[in-house]
Length: 578
Ligand code: AMP
Image 1 (spheres, rainbow, N blue to C red):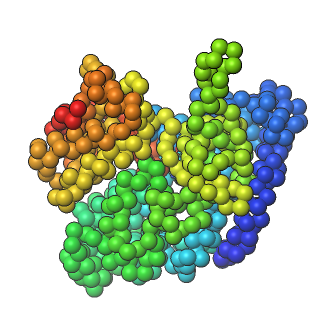
Image 2 (image 1 turned 120 degrees about the vertical axis):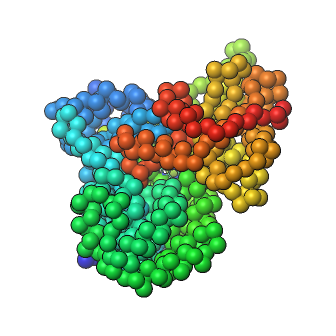
């Protein structure tokens, strides 16, 4: 087995980031040469030109919706090259939890290669700070079903496509992060059963586990919340060497039977440790004494889970994983010691061609009549972005997306050589808005954090949350859904509700609230496990737990999730803050 040459990875990365402009030019050239014969590009009459200037002049900036007819033809098995030169054989289903339905994007070998490049780049930097040596990794990863489209293409979530690729396992071995669970668990058809078995495998190999990870931090928190419920059963399995009857799939049972041997000493030890913990603080290092760090995407919509994760992790460092999407990767976290809240991503200039739309509205003076005129902001190149500015990312990938609006907003917080370091800000379209107010996912997160302080005094927490704009009332109002870890008095919840209302500091919101063109904010407390039901709902639609993100704002189109939330409301409160 070859171990990754981390020094070489770092050296190549340094060379590339020092020459970012040329690398971007070359990358664009390569993408356009490889795919020039595709119908989509042919139509745009680039006529063999591959320079950024011609590219920008000929190719429009698009959204997923614009490309849908093309992608659909690929999905249906069209024979001719549509978006890429080489035929697409695999489709990724992006998690699409914001729109309530998954969307299709092409996946190909080149995308797999860029995935491995991102993984090895951040690993190289990470391993300098937190070296791991031939250990095992407890990775809470799950694969959704890989189905076939009517055109005969494989379709699964992007993570599924990555995990199923033979190169993935080799890469994990090269990074000394061999997964402790057997394939039957990772690819099991029921994620509840897979989760249980991941935990069991972790315990069996507890001394060897050097790394606990998942794609998104949510899955790690969910795993240890589950552990709190099932630890006695896990101990019983270890004691007897017999797998719980809750695991019903024969393939998982036989794979686990090979690992599970009666071990009363281990069962006693784990039991003792669990009983000795106070409110499960420090559970992870207690179970896995040689764990070096905890790894997963922890920024953006994952930030609300950090508090709980820190509780389980105690002093084990949390390291934020890289930044990408089903559509393509963007940047690697090369500063692993930075707390996840401040994590930034250095763009890899050879994995795609990147452009940035400034978020600051580009207002120019109309000299003739002196009035203000808003113009469509012009995208700029990777090496042209400015410090402290916010941008929406546009990607051109090796997998058939050209000038594609990803929908994410990022802020430039610095540079590594010539390449910007990006901080994830929010999803662009996740807005709570009724009239002139605009609140993003981040604004919602901050408001929830502020209001949750009142219940934290009673050692309770918001397990998960979401929101909705209710315009069925006149005036419309914001609705915030909370699932709380225990019982809270009406008085405290009323205070939380008022605090939420006051915490949206957007000027449009505050002024609308003052004149009552937006009604009082409503806090709806939902029953235990409501968010688990939402997760189950998405799993039923073929989503994978690995890529799951709780929808933070539920629109009217997402009627099923809205119904789950509304059906489970136990109490509601209206703000009296204004
Ligand atoms: P998916 O649709 O499942 O492919 O998810 C991709 C989206 O997840 C991105 O467009 C981001 O909004 C979010 N995401 C991915 N990586 C990160 C990260 N490191 N930090 C914050 N958000 C991320």
